[in-house]
Length: 305
Length: 301
Image (cartoon, rainbow over all chains, first blue to last red; front, side, top):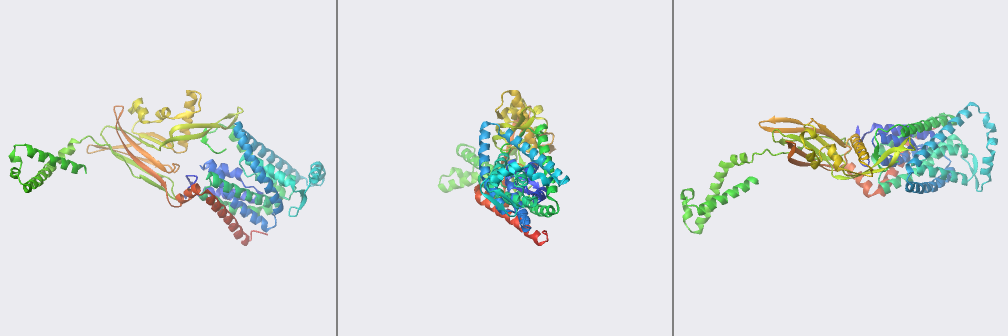
């Protein structure tokens, strides 16, 4: 059955957005990512204008991350304190990132920088997560010696002021650490035009040393707030949110997020990291193909990346 | 209305004739009497004669206006976009002079379009390399003809009425391009992009022509694409003979949103803040709602 989308000004078979929502919601509940890096290009592929695809995806993520956060919160896997600190950093970083894009656009090579940042970040994060989690799955004993290996960086983090204990995560950090790294992710996310979940998860795993199950819940919590802000701004300033498309997507994604959260509890932290790393690498390869293979059409609608 | 005017004209002619002519036999005797009552009667009689003459001459009048009028009619001249809209089949039909070829053009108003162009960055990476502007380009352009336009029309005529992609190429302004070769390349890409979006189409030989009792009828069924945005579209039919357009007729197709689609689209544009808040609340509600259903269903440990 087809439904007409009043803002996207196109008609779509309802099975497509519901199915996409289900798959991306599943990833969201499993890994704590918004899934914008998958959903937005898929929607564009199915004929949704790029600007509407990005804006509406953020609305859908509000629903999926609410559903996911709720599921993880019920089993005590959301560190609200850490989430708030990351949010503060992410908010400031987002503002800086938007200014950064303006400067890049004036310089005239915004698209090139954006695409390269995207590919490099996806590639580096994917590869690092993949190698690291495979190694730690193979020989768990190595983990004993790990803290000493990174003691220089850890000692630096410990020397920062405003040390505080994050109870749910079971870690002690300076409040500045999540704020600064949250800010860093916020800058990159704004530049790349994505939510940044795939960057935030590794930051929490490798820098903040949080346990994987708390990472997923906490990441979803802060994604929820980011996407509320983005949805409002997109609806208010760009008029690009398609309500019908968002409803179709969230029908799938809210259920998917619940199923993902249930599955996630059955998997070990390392297994989750490996699967996420593989997905990130597959997306990287897809983007590299897109960049190097001759496109079928040389013109596209102006307004999106 | 037209016939009524002819009748009035004939009545005045009959009256004038009676006033000036000496052919008494053709005029009533009462004409010679001079009182006003009789003058009123004269008026009535002249009307009567005019009616009789009109009835007798009627077939001749129409036979005299013989040149077959070109007509056009679209079976859907008002398309409403509702919740379940997925495009429409639009039939265009009409009558034309026997022996003429037919060209049917459907266009949206001409406008300005900006599109991203892809190019190679650093020699091997395909990405957006700036914007191209297309002026005087309609968003939608369908051209259907009985034979290929360049076989039935001269180049001048095609350019004059913007019939066919080659004439569209001359009509559209593309900026920035450095030379003709580059311009042609981007024009061809523009057509490919528009055809892929279902907004441009060209065909020849799809118009059905039938001849019935000396009249030529034409008909074509086109798929009105759901990608065509709301607006007013002009449907023009050209009757073509001896490489020239001899007649043209027009009709309009209006595409308008209705019901929920119209309400949501209007709200998104005119009340973005409220629309955004409703979207967020709906998303939060759906997220919590599904979360609670699953929670009760034993989704947690």
